Image (tube, rainbow over all chains, first blue to last red; front, side):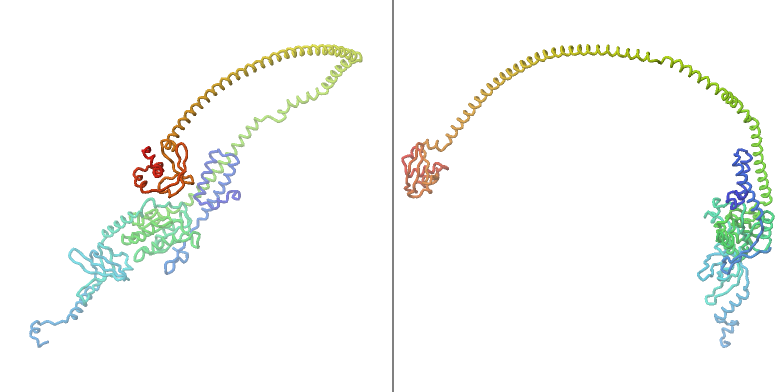
Length: 82
Length: 540
């Protein structure tokens, strides 16, 4: 289903994705959507759900420390252990 | 020295000024090599171009000069400020050259909380007046940041608290910018870290954070002082990345809290503000997905039910077609019978009509037509004669009318000519009379003019007895001088001409003529006088 959905789902932020998913659920629950459209938006809702789940899955902690040179310019990062 | 009795009397050692000064210097510097002195900063000047600061410390009744060397000032946590009550630590030194002493300050700290609070309050007012704390400047925090930048000490409980709470709620990528959070240089480092995060390019090697947390654990007002420094407050206010301040405990307030987009009471609270709870979101997403599925399925079921009931109401196709089909069948069956019947009818009609069609009928019709032609032709010739006669009568009538009207017309023309002739006669008579009258008028005018002409003519003068003298060329002579001796003259009288020769005796003529000589005729008179003196009496 994800292949059929508009490509921009892949770039949506979690916030936007879940907002749109909520609005799709509301419309479906109202039951006033035409059959063909209901299929289309259900598919999009499915894609949005996947996007949300993907973003939630990507919740991995990665902690780094900024390193700077003598003049205070950023040179890079290194892992930080606490 | 012992030679001087006065000095013996004084019984005390004698110093040179230099000796005394250096003795004093030693005494002062040894005794006060490390002192703490409390006083108010007064006459603060600095840092100078050299980097040193000069001012005085004073209380109600005394004053001591003070100096802070450049290197010391750079390291100071609290920068000296005019009017601030401080406790200064340092040593006294003297100037032997001018009998002065001063304190060289190594460290300085505000004298008590009150002084510090007053300083903070004053700074807050100033920065608020600049609008740095305006609500309108506050940015909204991102709901779910991808990368979080933390400005704090890399060691200690604060960063651990933050990371733990993030881990619990929603693990994220965290960039820590290590800084000193108290002591000398800390304010500059914190400000540089905030600016540094802001300066990271989007999509660069190091990701630019969506959110900043500036954090420090609890401590005394002095410990937290770096977060009241103007440089830090300005960096926080100027940050384009939304910023949460989490400095000290809940009760601690620093100026960065006013400039931040959100103030967290503790570092842990800052982490809570930064991210939502992941598990909640997971539940929310799956519940939304489940609701979507249910709603969608229900929609399908409803439609299916509708379809079924509609299908039941729909009559069968054979049922719909039965009646039309029956009609077609019966019509098809009737068709050949009807055709035959129709052919029979037409045949009978043809037979009936063709029976009447014979040669005799045709002949009688021709004879009838012939009779009709003859009758019509007789009527035609009669009509032609009648019509001709009628036209002839009409022509005769018209010819009579024409003759009569021509005669009348000629008579009318004759009468008109006669009238015009009479009128011409009358006009001719009037013209003749007018011409005669006009000629008479002209004649009268001419006679009158002739009389006038005769009256003004020289001949009139001649008639009165004057003479016109001409020379032999016929020119009128106007003066005696023009008459030469023996000249041939012609004398013209009214009644004729006489030729004469002049015999000039000019003296008599000239003496008598000038006064009485008119313009033309008198002159010849004078000349005539010469030849015919007898006429002179008649002349005048």
